[in-house]
Image 1: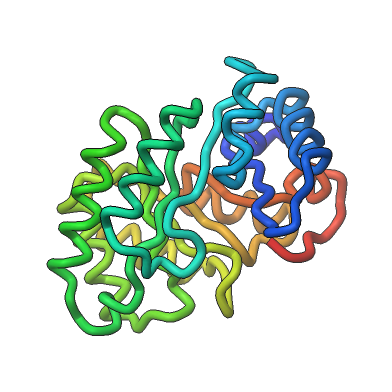
Image 2 (image 1 turned 135 degrees about the vertical axis):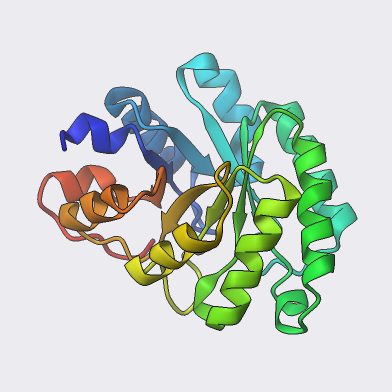
Length: 221
């Protein structure tokens, strides 16, 4: 698998709470140079990035991030503002408390509402696998599918663990044919990137893909 093929599946990510504008610029410049699938950035930077880079960059952001327990109306408002500012893709965090309570119908309804708010824009659903049992992960595969979301995503990168190949294999077994997979967190080396892509992931969220392709091991998200 060529480096460019790998990079075309990377959501080049900078979501640290202390990220400065120069950090975002560096991320975006790398995304333009290496032709990554997108940049995934905090909502507060969307308009500034869109104003500077326009159509050079596919902008992704996060909603209900990283804890997921915002009320649905607040998540909808976040999506509406993000799209107005120039965002193209949304990575939402499910209400993990609802998942742990077994309120899967409520979680599915929220995802469906947020997909409606996204319209034709891509919605990725972060289920934060590190906090879930296998049964809960399976229920989330079904909820994401039934709600019409575009992707299921493993992790925020801010939980107690990130993507595992076992979770990706579980996703493949239980998601519908129209749902793609995104791995995030736990992807540390070029071999990891290749492994997750060959296992069927369409996107990988990481801040370190460029370094990994140069032989470095990733640290952090």
